View 1 (cartoon, rainbow, N blue to C red):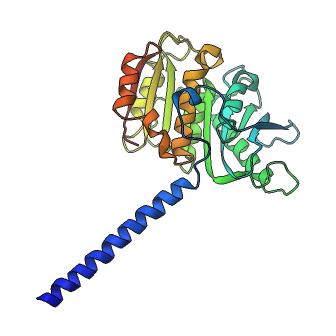
View 2 (tube, rainbow, N blue to C red; view 1 turned 180 degrees about the vertical axis):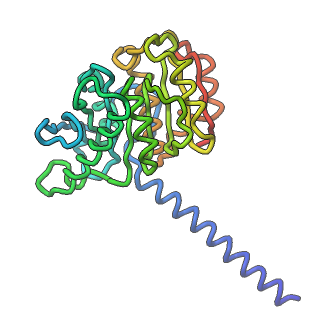
View 3 (spheres, rainbow, N blue to C red; view 1 turned 90 degrees about the vertical axis):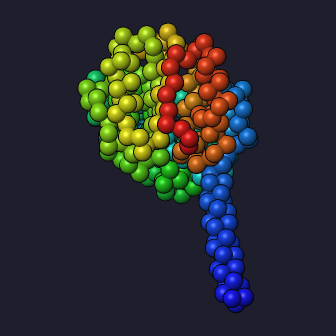
Length: 297
């Protein structure tokens, strides 16, 4: 009996050791993508600590999209990549602040002009993919400023209005992407039940172009429960809140937190998306009229 007990003890110890080792490997894998200081509300509401540089993709060099501006941290290292699309009739200048904001927190970001300003959401989704592919391709050239700065396994998308609809389409069509953030998304498709990419939808309560009751909310509700998801509604905000500088701190905080959590796998940002303190902040906020999620993540 003693021998059996000893045997079981050894087996149990071995299993425990394997479990601890697995946890350590998981923590190490997540930690390797952590960049920047520990997050704070104040830090997330403004540009981050990374110095940002830019380079452009001309209309002649762009393949599958109009043209673009790439924002990237000057610091050494490889970063996740995010492509951002403007909305109907708009240009990348309308979302340029997002490029700077996200890059300053440790991402490579490309904001794009679409092939035509009237391109529909699904076309914008394809163009977001083309833009990501272009950034990855550039990063493989030793003569390019992006050389060694891009992690092609960590890609994400975002966009406003029809660009937000394109973001959903890109997430649907590219399940390997790590995150998606549609802003005031517009799309005639109302069900996104096949999306597997973690998705944060941000809507404006007073939007009369892509009303939340017919766009953002049904889009969110249609996302499967197995997909990490959240919906934030901005109090009294109209369709053009991404261009309102007064909204930059709040929108930026959630975009950064979402991208950090899912593109970088950085759990330091989870408390800014989930948990009792976060729920308390939402409850007392005068800027958020609705918040839904399937936390924890």
